[in-house]
Picture 1: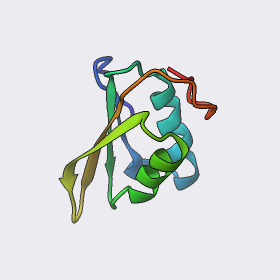
Picture 2: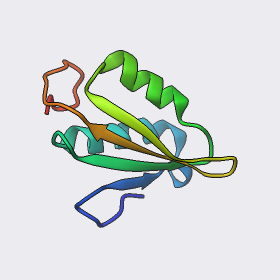
Picture 3: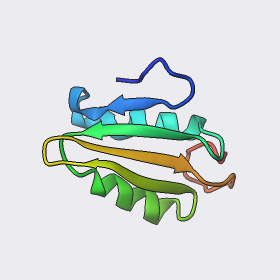
Picture 4: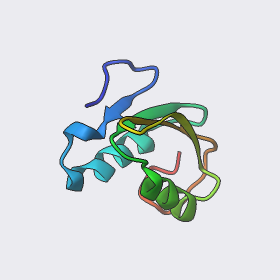
Length: 92
């Protein structure tokens, strides 16, 4: 699930029940300071999460694909700025 590295948390959602994935991801995102990031590993394109971040928190998080399937998808999400976004992510 989450790596022991304090430098860049990572989460492999393939081993997490679907209903728990986004809450776990957002728990990590709310702990990030601007310039910090996290990695997500999935068995599908996590495009719905990307859309959620872009629409609910515009300009707060960056998104970069590290690996694009077909079996494994990896993305890096970086907190770009500190701003209160009324999203429950901590407003870092």
